[in-house]
Image 1 (cartoon, rainbow, N blue to C red):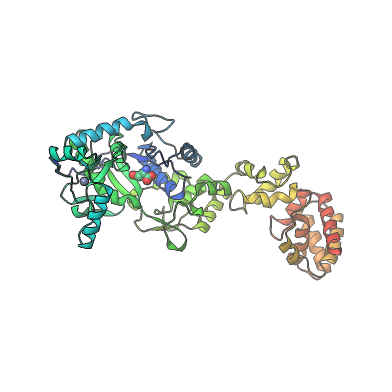
Image 2 (cartoon, rainbow, N blue to C red; image 1 turned 90 degrees about the vertical axis):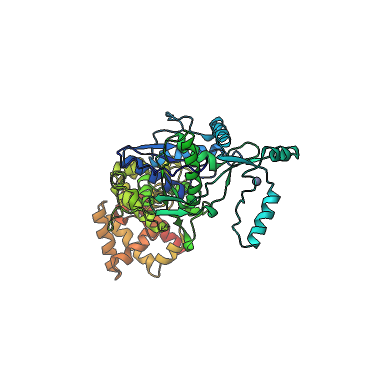
Length: 503
Ligand code: GLU
Ligand code: ZN
């Protein structure tokens, strides 16, 4: 009855059938990098093979799921440009795509599994399970569920129920090894003693992930399951369940599985959801471009070519092959993510860059009064910023000198730039700048000339000027900045610095 012959793993690609993949997060907490990487690989795989990406919400855990998290998931996918073909708000032939709205389906399948003997009610209490597990451990035996309720007779069941016991539904694992070919890891065989019978429905009737996830994959005709390595251990159980579903006419074929490598964070530990570096919202707030983040995240376990790490979405889709995914853990490298993002910022046309800066030029990011912002001035400075910022949020501090009444006074910069003789230099520079024509070239000559008069090279001469005018020792090209700021404000700021030095 139970041990169905192993069906061949589906190979729809070889048969030229477009694949159906799914991204099926649970709406708990904020979206994180690991989740996005999974979504991205499924999306790239679907788009590369002109297949279908199903977006399914696994919200069967009412205690942990939230509408806020659900909203964030949709918003994040849209921000990243990872479009789905079937799913929430889009609909599709297998709607609804939220598991909380599919409870009747799971109940029906659980009943069929029970009726056909693929599953059975288990009456063991937690205490009994714990006690037997401890005893098995002490005896050096496998400590998973021992099959106690596998073959209970009707009388025994009735007796348990008369005692007031409740039962969970447990899936009966076949007594045979399960072998499958992981698309990333190759052949994997798991022995039956390592996969005990497992619960699929709670005593209160609530179906578990172990049931709803493969049932939906079956009903939604998923051909390829690409997901994190942490779920590898559930795959033999799901394959066994699939075989039962095929026998029952509920599933057509077992999907192929590919387990994406772990992402390691600081100290070579698995990047955890709670790790601040893992929060997608953080990257959005810092002003990563979706293109930059997608480029970077695609490199967590995959590469386009040995000598290339900057590429666009279309190139990713054209090149993506699940067979090229590396089984070794991937290392999350923030510096590299920033570098890649910076490259994507450079590739934007100036107008797009200028517009993309928008949110960081307003409250709550911008420290200047809203009416102080001058779009024309910003448009002038933007090209200079575009070649220098790493993330869009860098823009605020780089241009604040234009829109604040007084520059930010960064004490460390002040101490560093204002040395003995800086006042004399500033007096000379003020005179040269006052006499100069107001364009970057002439302003440079003015500061150069002032420096020469004090035996200073350009670099040393421009430092006090920069700090006087912008507040900081580093920033956008100085003479272009002065040109855009204008003569009047520049001279006034030098005067203010001189007054501060004199005090
Ligand atoms: N809802 C599950 C999770 O977020 C999906 C796991 C899977 O891809 O099978 O972990
Ligand atoms: Zn039991």
